[in-house]
Image (tube, rainbow over all chains, first blue to last red):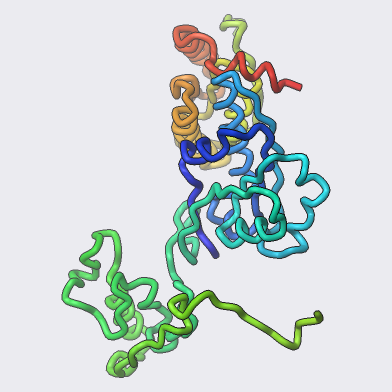
Length: 223
Length: 117
């Protein structure tokens, strides 16, 4: 899922300083799973904003609303009936959801309450880790299911490098060397011949490096 | 046991302190209280196994949130009191009351009067 962190409170307070009527919009998908922008976190932020304003004796009216997703128009359109009652929308969705809400309501200011970071997985409750960079050309079949693009600090394709020491990346002692993980996994799978193959230089045009991307399924398009 | 404890303590019963969420603590301050404390089972004695451990972590988190907002983190606290330990219940009630009294009324109390409706 897409993982992000809620922005520090001071940053959000600064963004909403001029406003008294705020629509706080959460999302029930990825950002709920990583406990950053779901219904609970919307409740926490709403309380924090209200308490902070109360401390300074200032007014604020906040509507808390959590959509199923903010990346599909059917859901974003659900706020149409009441969106104009508010001066500004503070969105707790991922960057995609925040932007889509802004696109669907171009006359409304939509402020981000989340710093979107990576595509990742839940290792345990409270711990999420990066796994995918969306490079558009997956080679997981060659590397035993471990991605060198996302998990190697240098995105090496024929690692490890000289900085790999006792299975740890030189960048950070808490970061495992992705190529050590790959070699260990290939051994477990009995696929060490994959390691002997040289993986060709990557064509990065399928990644973000080639420009913003679109996916189309013509058979599904009705308009 | 008919022990007395300060009258300003409002008891809200929950099946386990693990039921209490950070949202509830913040809402309590929104409603105008000066302090919140949780009285949970002794560590290791939680009937639901880990509820009181969750509560400990959540209260620690609540303290960081209060600090961010500008409310003294000492206003919220986690205590462990065995179910049958009436005297300790009364003692904790007195202790927390004195602590919060020393801190004075909640800094957001005046402002929250505006949104009680």
